[in-house]
Length: 323
Image 1: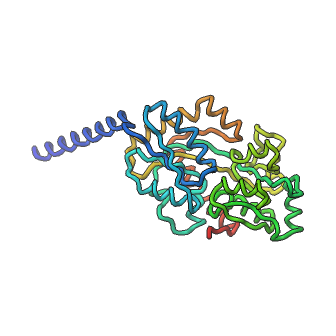
Image 2: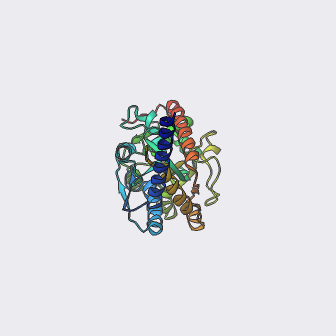
């Protein structure tokens, strides 16, 4: 009996010591530079979001936040690097809608988005905009649909395989019952450039990527992908006003490798939420037709899981595939 009591005491002391060590680890975190992987190509909204978050965290922590762009394969290359990183809090991954869609779009992946990552916080959500090159004789979603039906297979849209540009356009294509053709580019930046040059005529990309071009008159916005109009440009109709039921949005959130200590996740969450809920950040998001969120890890985890299910249905409905 005495031996049993001794064993219990030792076990409890060991557990208390381990908990104390984890707490101390979080208290001193971060003690060195932090890598922030953006698994999408330059020009994508994920990169812009990381550049907004990183400097503020750098200032708060007094440590470098190195934004590392790892684009390719619809975001799966960079995500795989993040999934295999040490779970010590020194590798962050910018999660996005692409990661939620990847399992259904690409089949076998070099990582499991739910098992290989732990959620930190949902940073923001941003709708996309359906825009066209000014040379295309369509000034509304209705006119674009009519034009596409009159010219089946002759109108192209820009969007890399597996990206939200691809998925959003394919969903529009299916729901509007039109035949428009994908021209794949490596990321949002090249896709926007292709549409600006007239190589392609249509693009459905995050508002943050298209607003400057629309304001300059180099692209013509026809509709927003959210179910409600944006306060930023209330005159821009929703696509759903012409294509009932169409409702998609891009999201961005911080993920870390699975196994990262809970106290570090809690510290990361607290710091990131302070950043995204600050008045300056909220105002910046509104100006870019986006919405600041700042969720708990549990809320983000549930949202991520639900979004994977949503895109599974959408991809099955549209028949989209990443080649």
